[in-house]
Length: 573
Image (cartoon, rainbow, N blue to C red; front, side, top):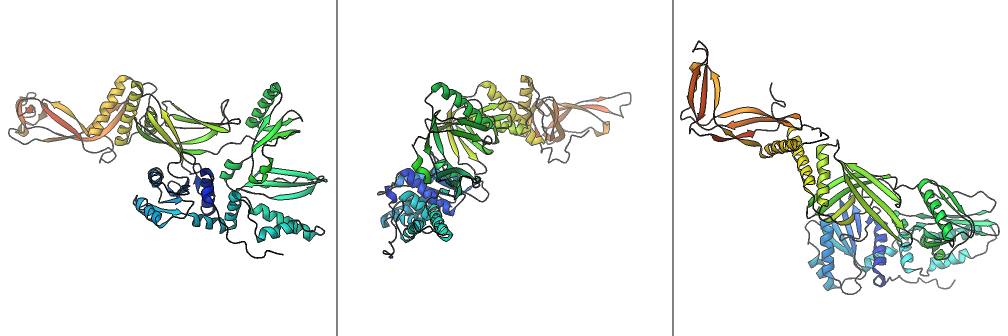
C-alpha cells in the first residue's frame, strides 16, 4: 500500500473557532484529566470551569478560556481573575489561550496576574499545551476529530480498507465489524455507540444500560441498531435528543398535546397514526447529525415508563442587597409541578418554604427558572426562623441571590432581584425573633412560640434581650431596709461602696427564664434610722440605709455569667 510514510503532526487552528466552541473544547480537554470538573453557564463569575475540592465544599481550581487570537486583553483577564477568586476562592486559576505567548506576553502575564492574589496559583494553557492534549490520548483524539474533523492517517486508511474488504467468512465479518467499531469509538468525545445486528424475526435486544437514543436500520430482513450512551451529563445538555411534532390539523393538535402532557406527568403510552403529525429532530448525538431537520412521517409511538424526576438539590442561598446579606441552606426535593411547569422542587427551613419551577419552551428553544418564597411563623426552632427571616429581609431590596449546590452536582446560579423595603410589621417580627435568639443563646433555654404575641410581650422580650446584650441593666436606688441584731448594726459612714450578689429571672412570652447570677455595686452608704422590733430591743431591730450623699443613686445590676457557665445552672430556691 502506498503512503506508508507518516502524515506528520496535526496542527489545530484554535483561534479560528467561535468563542463558544473554544470554551467547549477547553472544557472537554479539562474533563479528560479532571472528571469532577463542572462547566458554568453565563454569567460565569470569572470562571468557565470549576473543580470541586475533596470535601466538595470548596473549589480547588478553576479555568477561564480567553479566545484572543492576536492581542491579549489583559484588563479582561484581571477582571476575570478577581471575580473568580472573590466568588469561588480557588487554590489555582488557569487561563486557556489559543496561541503561544510571546516573550513580552509571558512577562505581562507574570506581572499582571501571577501573585495578584496571595495563596492563589495563576498559570495558563497555551496552544502547544492544548494541542498536546488533543493528540496525547485516544480520548483527546476524539475531541480533536469532533471539533476539527477527520484527518486521513495510516490507521483510518487501513480501517477503511478493512471495512470494505471481502465478506465470505466469519473472520472477515468480525474484521469488518471491528473496523466499524473502531470508527465509532474514536470520533465522538460526547457519546459512545454500542451497535449490533439481528434478523427481523429475532427478539429485539434491550438497549445498553444508560442508552439515550437507539437508531435502527432495516435492509433485506436484517436490522442493525446503534445505541448512543452519554459519556457525562454535559453531553446530554449539549446533544441530548430534542425534536418537534408538527400537526397539520390544529384541533387534533390540541387533543394530542393534552395526551402527551398527561404521558409526561403519569407515564404510559401514546400512539399517533400515520399522517397525524410529522416529527423533526433539532438536536441529536453527533453521530446522528444527518437526521437533523429532516421531517419524518409514519406511525409514532411515545412511551414513558415513569415521570423523570430531578435529583434532590441541597441548596445554599446567599442573598446580597442594599438591605443586608444572609445565607440559608434548604434541601429541595421533587414535588408535583403546577400547571404550565415541567418540574418543581420544594423545601422548607425555619418557616421559609422555597419552590423552584422549571419549564422548557420547545418553540423558542429556551428554558425558564422561577423561585418562589413564602414564610409562615411555625414551631421551628427560633434560631432557624431567624436565619429564614434574615434571608427574607435581604430580599427586600435591590441585589442578587446566588444559589449553590452543596453537593457540587449543579453549577452555581445567580438571579437578580429588586423589591420594595420591608414594612414595619416585618421589621418588628424580625426584631422579635432576633431578641428571642439572643435570650436562647445566653440562657440555653428553648422558647416556645405561641400562636399570638401581644405588643406587651414583644416589648418585654426586647427589654430582656437588651439586658442580655448589655450584660446587665441600670436601676434607681433610693435605699433599703433590713432586720439585724442590735449589736451587729453596720457603721457605713465613710465606708467604701459594697457589692450585693443575687440572681435575675425574667418572664418571656409567658415562660420563666433564669438569666443568671448578678452583682450590684452600691454607692457609699449611711444609716439613717434604727428601730427596735417587739418588746425586747435586744433581740432585733430594723435598719434603714441610704446613699451617703442623701440623693437617689443610679446603680448597675450586672450579669456575671450565662446560666450554662455559672456554678448554679438554675436559680436557688
